[in-house]
Image 1 (cartoon, rainbow, N blue to C red):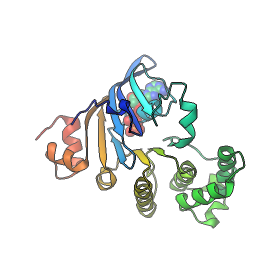
Image 2: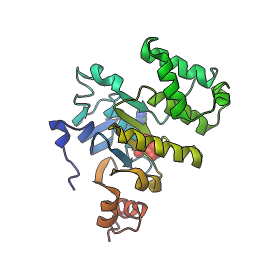
Image 3: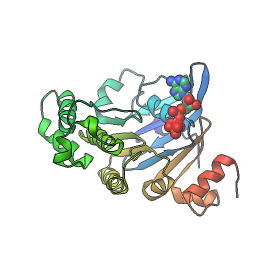
Image 4: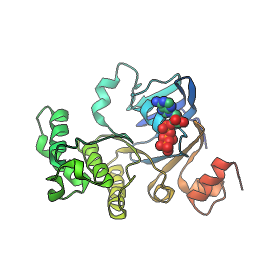
Length: 255
Ligand SMILES: Nc1ncnc2c1ncn2[C@@H]1O[C@H](COP(=O)(O)OP(=O)(O)OP(=O)(O)O)[C@@H](O)[C@H]1O
């Protein structure tokens, strides 16, 4: 395992961070985060609360600058001139995304579909968003302000995926969703990866990660401390499950 692999800089990968450091308000938050996401892969980024997962994703999608290290998204630096060109092929669901509460679910979808498409192909985008959200037509006809937390999350996931982006970056997509919706999201992510799309997802649900991830990167205290296919992390860190391995990794418990 190469925790700080920067192979991605040579091309062929969907996205990567290589030794990225970032301080926020004078406090080091990322100290050396590395991860490489391939096309057709579900890549889970895991870590304790405050480990730096959201900050890493924000650096990756160009919302935050980095102090040092390298980043590539679909072959370009997210803080370089070429990013505008590929931005439309990246779907990002932030952890704290919110819906327009006064609009219905469908009006939320239409708003974003028109924004993305400039009014062209709106129907296809709407159809995709409805499908990926898994919300019923009745639910979509209701004001989004009356949705449960999980329903809002599903609406936002549908909107994020409606343009079928080549790189999908999801910050805790299953947070607050019920087991049926979570199961559906799992199947959607598998389907997207089978189509060759790259999926980078954060979650605290390590059972889910073990089930769907082709690769898991674990960050601790702002640094990548382990990365590999779930079975390999389980073997290497002497767990029966990925959760055991995770605990051994972040507590330094070892075997
Ligand atoms: N804008 C900010 N101002 C101050 N501190 C910040 C800011 N953004 C992030 N941090 C700090 O950086 C650290 C990493 O935060 P981050 O949200 O990236 O962690 P996380 O791994 O996503 O956590 P969680 O699992 O709880 O969502 C935390 O200690 C957080 O308080």
